[in-house]
Image (cartoon, rainbow, N blue to C red):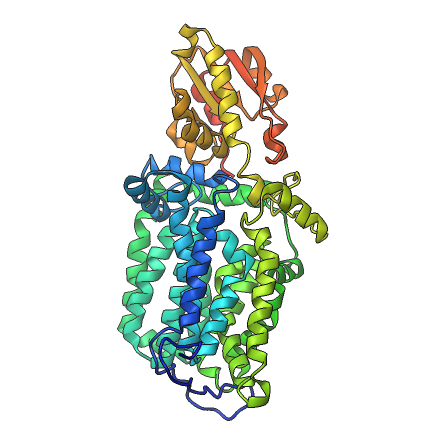
Length: 533
């Protein structure tokens, strides 16, 4: 059995080059996926499931679980699709860490497989498909974004499927593909509105390439209407809630996110995609934009460039561009397959695969919890790595995507201790209010075993779920400093503090207060505390 196929036989040459005479690009005639692709995808899923338990649930996962208790057509910081899926998963499998992490782990496997599908659609043979799949699998950004439950894991897959449909549409000139493309875009927007960047890039590509003749085709507009129809319920929710997501994005840009220059944004892609893959995706972009055999797919390169420009000038977080890279990796794999086709250059193929696996082994601990926490801290120090953050927060010994998995159980235990210490008559009318949704979500998740009441928070969608009782006798406030709390209460007592060496420092720097005698109406205090960020 040949290593690249599930059956006997040699691969068909693709004759892909940046300089050859123009020729039609046809997809690989064998529709069966190379065995190595399936092995890589399965290995990635198993790696996630085998390591995901180490550091506990991530801050946003607690919030997503809370959102799943309040199903709606929208939320302050995301559309509803990923929440509906999570509610279904919880109904079937429960809300254990393994149950919550199962879906993103499977989505990683799907993304790896889609990378190979993109290479095949562009005309790649078995090696190109396997190389594309492995390049996706060793990219830290994809490992990290599928290492916990969030809309980002779904976004990667929706974007890849949309690009795959676009590639097939370009290759076949089959206008009927606009309809499934509209379906995917509509569902993708119901998951995360950042897919609008793809829509913008697609619009530029249609106008700048021969695809513009499809503007006269009914199917394109049917696909656009289908996408808009699917997205409409969320838009109506935004309208009825005062366009809160715009407020959220403005506040995040102004107060939370670290601003990056376009150059810093571009160089960050080298590390988040794995430096070893950089020549691959650069070759892929060049082939899509300038290659004679790749010119049919120039629209795919234009989509990437347009998306990059918009994100770079907006000071976006580097990982926002991550979903746009699989097609570049796939195109680059085609170029490498062609360049290494001669008998004297065949050694390049296994050497490149080994190099990618080795680089993936080196970078994986920075993306997912492969190592125990103390071992990881020693590892990053040995490599001279300093944790970076995309937000304006001071870091401890761990990067934020790891630090946000620590301290939550300890926080809940401390709040439960304080709650139990209250007089019985106060406990019956007490409220727990936290500064951010991570604290509230963790208390809601772990607090059930301690008999705690539901937590409240003015942060993002928790704000709409209300402050609780109109006149609580006492409030346990989590996450505010004494100076912030004291002016609003007649009696303020510092009752405890989170102790965790690995949690984000801002979580351990603020005490937990027991407060009595609110000086202003609760509704007014709630409006003042509102925080969409």
